Length: 418
Image (cartoon, rainbow, N blue to C red; front, side, top):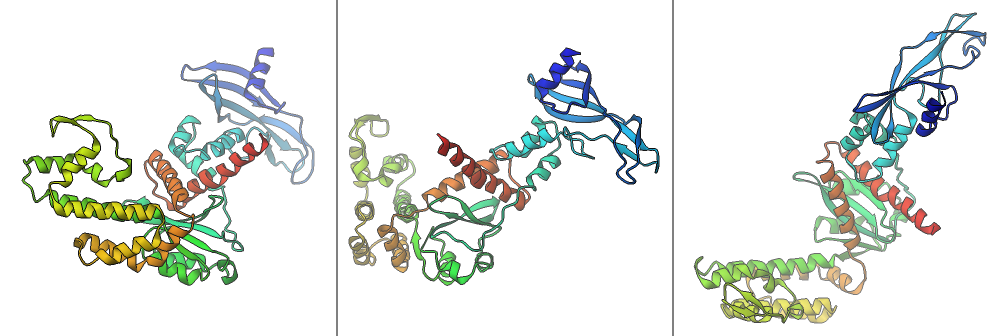
């Protein structure tokens, strides 16, 4: 009997009315045979005295793992019958809720695992419950939108929910808390969400950083009249980099595919994209050139193949220099001077920059960017990849809010105690 009581202590069963009768080792899992019995209570209907009747059919209650094995408690509950009205009642315990078959501690463990980046099917398998049980615990998380507050600095971006379907996300730049997750990124969807905030609350927003998705511009101006729109610096540089790469491909395709020039331009394309100030002077053997060359020497050979490539490369590097040094005047004056003489690929990019000149100037003058939100999007991709995708948007949204808002609060609380 002492050994069975020791099992009760190991499992953390605090109800003294549960008596362990036997312990079985099934090889794949452990089974604990127990009964629930206590003195007769009063009737809930007529408050008359009840009498012990019989034991209910045993309940199979999945429990937490013990010594690396899945554990199942076979619990038989005492039934009582009222001597006055004849109504039946079943004994209750803190181990499992009334009319439930899953232990309370297992449900708590499900909630704890949902905070981590673990697929719901894996949680269900590890705790010997169904995926529906995990989803029911997920739906117990409630996130209320505070319509009386919006952060002064917001980040806007989108992420992929399903193939071909993008969703909108807004984040507080300072605290990294999620402000909104919407099923779609259309102007109507964004407008309907933020119009729930009063104009006074929306007027408190001072800065909104976003990528170069033009539909965001108009809706941001209308909804947030006092906010400055800041384009993400990464996307500005990315536009220049992609234009330079397309010109390289265009010039490369002018050569024969078996030629030395074609192979060199295709093999060392990264050197053309890279910042010239960061090129290494260390020599390596280059099979295409059959000699040991540094990156700068390889680049010089690539540029010698085409005068047009050299001109656009010099322009590209000069624009990068002005942008990185935040020399706004030099950056735009160079664009205005060369827009008529450059390749049409660069012309398209320059026209976009001139059209969004005020937003790019904000990006160079203000210290805000979408870097933090891009890190959040990476976490969202991890959640989606681990789960092999989501069919239900609300479940996906809740997992994101749990992983970002709740976990961040718990982490900050722990760090503040150190």
